[in-house]
Each structure stands twice: as C-alpha cells, then as structure tokens.
Image (cartoon, rainbow, N blue to C red):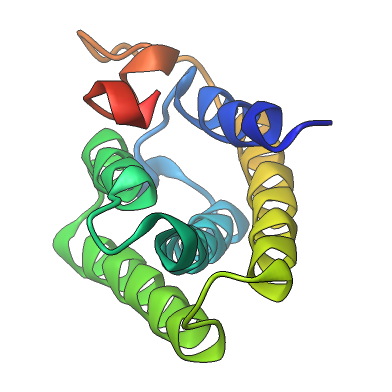
Length: 142
C-alpha cells in the first residue's frame, strides 16, 4: 500500500460517521488519545521533511477535535497527547532522512490501525456539512 493511500484511509474511516467523544466507551476514548499522539508524531515527522510551515497533520487534529465535540477535559487531553507525540518525534528526528521517513510510515500504519478500530465501533451520527473529504481545508490538506 502506498503512503498516500494509508493516510487517506486513516481519516476517511474516522470521519465517515462521527460519534461524539462523550458517547464513546473508555477503550474508544483511549484509542482517540492514542490517535491524537500518533497525529502529533506524524506532524513532527512530516515537518522534518516538508518544513515548519506544513500543517497537514495539525489541520487534521483540529478537525478531529471539532468532529468529536469532546467535553473540555477530554479535548485538553487529546491536544496534550498530540503535543506530546509532536515533541517526542521532533526531538528524535529533527531532520529529514531515511530514518525519519521510516518512522513516518510506521506512524501512518499505527494511525490507520487505530482509525479502523474506531470506525468499526462507530454508529452513524448526523453532523451537517461533515463528509470524509472535509477533514481539513485547503488544497495541501487533500
């Protein structure tokens, strides 16, 4: 599977039929936290090669928090996990090389697995204006 395909599957599975975070079981909430961490890792690893201006994964994290509509405490936990994942990978892979690219691919695989598990437990919810392609705005985000 190609990296772009894996990345696309990650969010189309997650946003296709959102479920509010406060309605999720504890194991699903933990998967959301794990996904937030993985998004942070992915953001740092992508920026290592694309530059600090690249906001591809940050925009998806913002969209995730919007779609989840989590209570304030859980929203803060998700953002903290994103930032922790980002800081961890930023310090480990400050530059773009083969190791950072391999780490990015591994993070994509983890994210895909988490998104698939979340999507299996989701029930359809109605959110006006939310479609799989609306995960993030802008041409670079697609």
